[in-house]
Image (cartoon, rainbow, N blue to C red; front, side, top):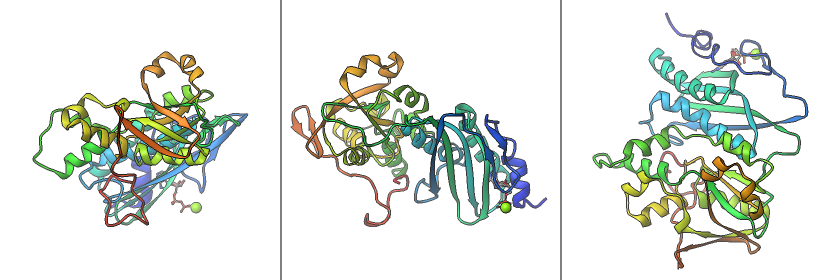
Amino acid sequence: MALDEFEIVRRWFRDGPAAAGVTLGIGDDAALLRPPPGQELAVSTDALLEGRHFPATLRPGEIGYRCLAVNLSDLAAMGAQPRWFLLSLSLPRAEADWLDSFAAGLFEVAREFGVGLVGGDLSRAPLGVCVTVLGTVPRGRAMRRTGARPGDWVCVTGTLGDAARALRLETCPGETERGRAALHERLARPRPRVHEALLLRDKASSCIDISDGLAADLRHLLEASGVGAFLNAEQLPLSPALRASCPRTEALQLAAGGGDDYELCFTLPPARWTTLDPELRRACTRIGEVEAAPGLRWRDSGRTFQPRAEGFRHFTSRGAPPPGDS
Ligand code: ADP
Ligand code: MG
């Protein structure tokens, strides 16, 4: 049977995991949602287009996983509890196998983080996915980019540079590396730091998620806060897989400038470090300190260090971006 858009929604998208607070879900002209009393909505949207935001080699299940995961990362940066999402899907053809895998990846993330699909849109067009996420946060308590103060520590969750390394491996076929699967996992299935973010809320003075690269994204945070920072490259957290995959200087470059990690970068008054949840503390690394003077200053074991690339800009960067840069 030919798959029209109503059939596609009915077969693949209508019966995903349920979420609380949905008065009316998929099927009418709009969804009706009930945020808990005393909370405000945090809303964010991100498009993923083939060749621009992800390589054509990414599998449909990975696209489904990634499109929701990267949106949840934006909610995490605000300290919001993810609740619902909308999906705008452009497909060149309606293929059952593709839709099976895509929906499996999508709903794996939805189930894990308890978010419900409440609506969307379908078009026949080159492959592209646009997700809008809605989360809730107690009124006035969202984390922002604006609260960093001189003397605060600069910290990050997890490890950096793995996804950027995985992209380079993909463009150099034939190169076999130990830990290649672990690196690819970071690119294809980024883990949004939702749980960590909820523990950081009310503690961090500012927060941003790292999508374009630490140097580029931290710069946004510092500018928003009207401050600068000093960073120690030797303290950048590197995964064993990344260390095994390239020389140290290259690993540091990828950690400082490479994108697609979806870790959180936050600032914290030093006295609050010991008040953080112990498990959260184990997942975080202090990499530098906020200073009054604007700009970002790097050191690597006392020597100067300059990150190579500082984030791709769609409208001003030259030439085509490596897919995966956003
Ligand atoms: P309309 O024409 O009124 O905009 P549609 O025909 O596009 O509505 O969609 C019908 C219903 O199916 C709506 O509730 C819409 O939110 C839902 N829907 C459409 N596409 C998707 C999708 N990709 N995922 C989830 N729900 C969808
Ligand atoms: Mg309508």
